[in-house]
Amino acid sequence: MNDTRGLGIELARILVTYGTKHGSTAEIATRIGQRITAAGFDTDTLQANLGIDISKYDALVVGSPIYAGQWLPESTLLFAVHRERVSDKPTALFSVGMIDVKHPGKLREEHDAWIEKAFTEEEIQLNIVSTATFRGAYSRRNLPTWLRMIDYILRIAPQGDHRQWDEIERWGDEVAITLRRVLDPNYGDETECS
Ligand SMILES: Cc1cc2nc3c(=O)[nH]c(=O)nc-3n(C[C@H](O)[C@H](O)[C@H](O)COP(=O)(O)O)c2cc1C
Image (cartoon, rainbow, N blue to C red; front, side):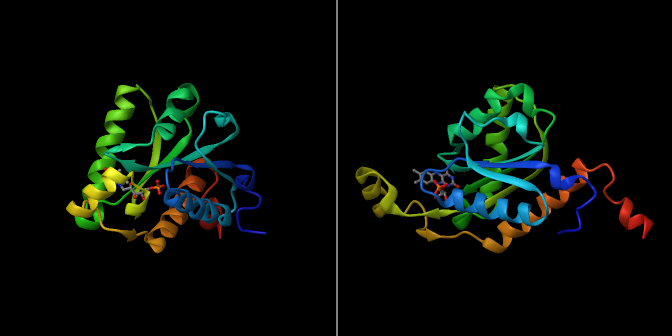
């Protein structure tokens, strides 16, 4: 079916899990999960919840939108709850936010600061193999009325869907290659022999 047959990779299970309030991160996670599946992995894409059995998976891709400089609690909690089980698993992290639209590079700063703070405070060790930040989608209509009025006056964030699907897909493909390399000790042998 694909070129991963015989390497054991088709048996590797990958969890793509995410937090979301308004759905834009869910769609990004779904697209990433599709790319990893297309690379030959057995992939589940699930909204982060404490019922997820992390022990079933060989590697994790975890993402969250950033709200007020922080990940949504369910994505961080997942690591805290499964503290002992996550430290060895190859893990890729992504953050989604709007700050980059006005201030390019700032989303990466927010992501790095949050990961550093959250995981240091919680004493969570992760085997991070890749990270990414993506522009998200924002609509004033999702805000509570009082905040909607403030946002209307101050124009806090640009409206609209700013997701860059090419970038998201490229990262999904890169993560699949990275996971193949770290999960399959024989990876590369077939190219060296041919
Ligand atoms: C109240 C509020 C606070 C936000 N705070 C940030 C922020 O600190 N940094 C950022 O880059 N984006 C911020 N955003 C933008 C969201 O991260 C972005 O809209 C994201 O795509 C939402 O994801 P979701 O649709 O999965 O909930 C904020 C949006 C709202 C409504």
